[in-house]
Image 1 (cartoon, one colour):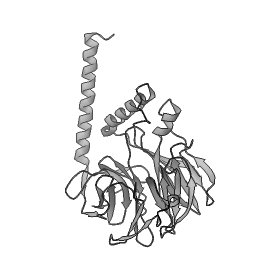
Image 2 (cartoon, helix red, strand yellow):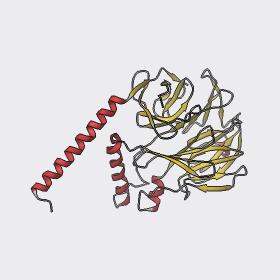
Image 3 (tube, rainbow, N blue to C red):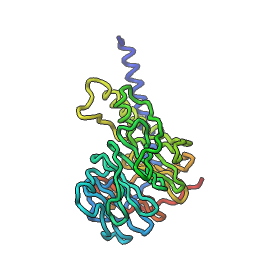
Image 4 (cartoon, rainbow, N blue to C red):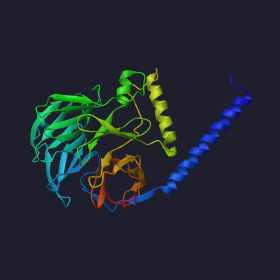
Amino acid sequence: MHGPTSVRAILRAAAAAAAILAAALAARADLDSELIARARLFPSLTSGVTAIHRDNSGRYVVLTERAGVLMFNAKGEPAGHAPVDSSPASSIAFGADMDLDDQGNIYVADRAGNTVQMYAPNGNLDHSIHIAGPTSVASLGGGEVAVASLRSPKLVTVFGAEGHVVREFGEPEKIAGRDELNRYANIGRLCRDSSGRLYYSFTYLPEPTVRRYDRYGYSDFQLVVSTADYVGASMSARKTIAREEGPQRSKGGPDLHVMLGPVAVDPANGDIWLAIGGRLLRYRADGAELGSFLIYTPDESRLVASAMLLESGRIVVASSALGVFDLPRPASSAP
């Protein structure tokens, strides 16, 4: 049992730690730049956007949670949708993520439908792959598609052109003692770079983490955000995971903190962009930090990104609650 002296010492230590964290946060705020959106894009999209891509014809292809895939031309005008028909077989119950291949085919991870749907560029359903709870998808070319899901023992499952599993890879991090909880805490999203390498971003790990793989599952790089300004959030996330281990766990499934939002890799230079809360972090391909940016709507409301697309002159950022916005592209930092 702690005596008065030890209690005072603990309180002093806690106060000192809080002061250090507050100072770190204040220092980081001074280093942040601000990116204020210049305009809102695709006004008909008000909420629920989960992925944005642009195909080789210049069309923007946008996935929403409940309304399927919407397409817009370079001027932002409606230019189609998927699925074209409303049959149950081709519908999307919950659009969690999307990717395009070089031919413009659209791959949608339908988490509630337990399928990955592949649509032709005109929106017609081509075929479906059945997998429990897909959370993310990335086209690998040659008919192969990588899928992250809720229940697969590995982080990534690769399906061939015929819809059969051809390989699995990626070991989950050991963050919880209960197997089901540990797998849930390792849920993540996929993106790829211009060389076809995959990036798996862990949504719930206490320290925001991105791991890079080649298409065959060899990992050569991992980026972990563990700077002082994220210590408090990481500690809170660990406490939540610990609570979910015990009798006070949430009913209906774990209720974990989202630590890392969408990740995108610049096709021009390989820079890695991470969305964390209302901030974008920019890193070189070797993990060196290049910048931190607070992001805002045109009326200067904070933006929390649900999807991100890097273009040569701008960053297109979606908020699940506010819509899609055109943010100015910051100048490249010196190496």
